[in-house]
Image (cartoon, rainbow, N blue to C red; front, top):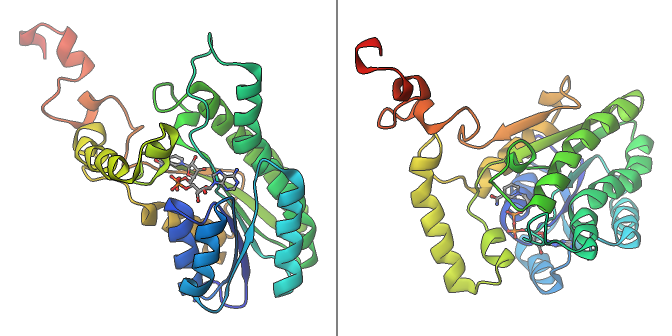
Length: 278
Ligand SMILES: NC(=O)c1ccc[n+]([C@@H]2O[C@H](COP(=O)([O-])OP(=O)(O)OC[C@H]3O[C@@H](n4cnc5c(N)ncnc54)[C@H](O)[C@@H]3O)[C@@H](O)[C@H]2O)c1
């Protein structure tokens, strides 16, 4: 019951990482106020999740919706202690030589400005409580090319720097700000970003799971619970001395090239050295 007596606002909680986090935070005793654009699923969750769960429709590309979510959470539950800025989607997939300015703006609104405005409008409520914790979902895309579209990756890199500077600015109010960088996690995000149907989504996630063994040292697919657990840690008092940083939760995807961890693939030195010098 790490979060007994605390209110957590979680965005993008109708599906995937956010939904799993809603369930975990509820199990840990939090009152959870969830904001999502998916009104049907959010409303259904009101009966499924039971006491301690509230849903408010919120499109995180709209600042007014974000402010209304934070104010609603504080009014209904007495205040806010934790914010998990998690909502997101793949966004436009065009390369830099093709993307339109409008698509770029949309990606930044969805993935970067949403996080800034989440912090902006939660902060007054956290201050009133004497402090709290904010967790932002970034991505491994923030570090390297090849894991997501350019607009998505750039926005996620922005989330990391936003996290650092916000942590610096809010430390005086006893508010910690950290980010999580998931690797490939089996959720609906991949299928949704290409307009695939439910069946195709399951296929994509199955292939993702199979590919995991070759893509990263921890040879299993990432699951939403892996990220929910990391979010809970960063939001909890156990992370009281942790702020302005990020936690990679990627099965080791970014440790190095496959040759550094897969004995079946030659490392770079092995590949270039003559056999008698290896
Ligand atoms: N799944 C992965 O491999 C992965 C990797 C790195 C980062 N992430 C990030 O994790 C977060 C959660 O994604 P997920 O994988 O659980 O995907 P998901 O599609 O399962 O869930 C995303 C949620 O965000 C909501 N959402 C989308 N647009 C919104 C908007 N404008 N306003 C409010 N809510 C909106 C959706 O309705 C959904 O409930 C995202 O920020 C995503 O970028 C995911």
